[in-house]
Amino acid sequence: MPNFCLREVLLCVVLSLPWTNPAFAQHDHSSSDFEVFVAAEAFHGTGQTHSGDADPWIDADLVFGFTKHQFRVFGEYYITPDERDLERFQMGFEFVPETVFWIGRFHQPGSAWNTEHHHGQYLQTGITRPYIERWEDEHGIIPQHITGALFESRQSMGEDGAIQISGGVGAAPALSDEGLDAISLIGDNPGRHRLSVTGRLAYLPQYVGASGIGLLFGHDDLSVSSTHTLGSLQSNDAKVTLYGAYIDWTADPWRIVATNYYVDVALTQIARNESFMSGYLQVERQLPRGFTVFGRVEDSARMQKSRYVALFDDAGGEIVIALRRQALGVRWDFTRRQALTVETSHIVSLNQKSNELRAQWSAAFP
Amino acid sequence: MERGVSVKKFAATAVLLTILAATNPVSAAEQLVLIVSVDSKVQQLDSQEVRKLFLGLTVTHSGDRLRPVLNEADVRVKEIFLQNIVSMSETTYDRSVLRLALIQGQVKPVAYNDIGLLIRAVVADPTAVSYAWAKDVAHDSRIKVLRVLWYD
Image (tube, chains in turn yellow, red):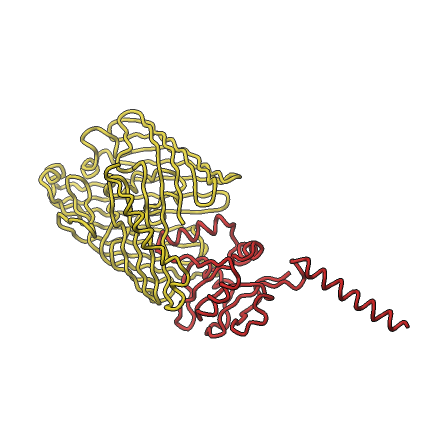
């Protein structure tokens, strides 16, 4: 594994060790913490499926946070054999409890899945994420990483419930030959980055719980920076507007996660704009002895007709854009903070069908 | 003579009760109490605030952000904490705290498995909030007991 820099992981862990010492924080009213989410995966697929960037055989996600009075700093550093990226880095001020104004690079709040699971595999029951929720560097078609300002608030409503509001404004990714290029905090930033406005409004039945139901919004102005993309799209600009609704509900031993997006793509140099829909439903059931079974159905409408979506499909014929998928799996939390998961799925892509089988070990440390 | 017998019976009963109390850790007088430093400005926290605090959410008092300190010095204290304070299984609690760390970098509560160190940590930090057996802090003038969280 020539590109996998284990020393970076170790360096981060070593640097974080003093933060975990309670005595470090006792006298200056500050506190800090770090978590490392690790996963290793085996993959087998029929047809022209491949594991690709979406499924590195091993990955580590380092999450660190620091709080002093009302100031907060938070980051997420993701490492795979092929990628090392500061996925999120946010500096925030908490005006009142659970109302924070952040600046930095963040995951756009209009994604139901990614704002819950981010890059940490262990807290995600299944191995795969829905295709519509893929990251930009996995041929994702919805902008996910925004650099700018984010406002988040959770306020009590009724006896136990809460209203959650999130809104982000910043620089959207640019559209290049490789797909969406989000602003990188530690690398080069080719292309022009235009405005992104995203948001979420949700009702939480329990202030401290994970269940919620809500509405999602995103509007990204994507500049086209290459002649190849310009030729395919026949437009030097794409305005992607997303409207969505989601539910993530836990009623032990059941959990349901369902999301539907309507995506409108406005192109400047052709008369007809595009729109498509994509959604998914995941049902999970906890069983005794740490087992959880889960199934997910993904479906879409009009994606195959979209010139914008076609930009993200792989020229080699490998499956990167799925129109439909059915996934089924079982997870076993065999010890504290470690799990084994097996997932099988059937995929219908823009031009072929295939089956996949995955096995994964995931964990969180310390 | 009768008075002497009565005194002996009383003394025997007292000795028996003392022995029972000493040998049985789940005595009728057991109380788990919410504690802060005597220098803390906190006078009271309701159940919802205590739950939010130990789940890793922000709870402030007089402008100070409170810091939860977990007592893991005793298995039974941990059980009572999970059942009566956060109302979750150990796995669900662990995942909730991890989830908040992943979503917005919230700092996990600090845990102590030595009651002496825990009390020292609470005494040293006026924003620290923890819980302990009443008997462990009853005569400690550095500790302020806010209220009883659980009793048997």
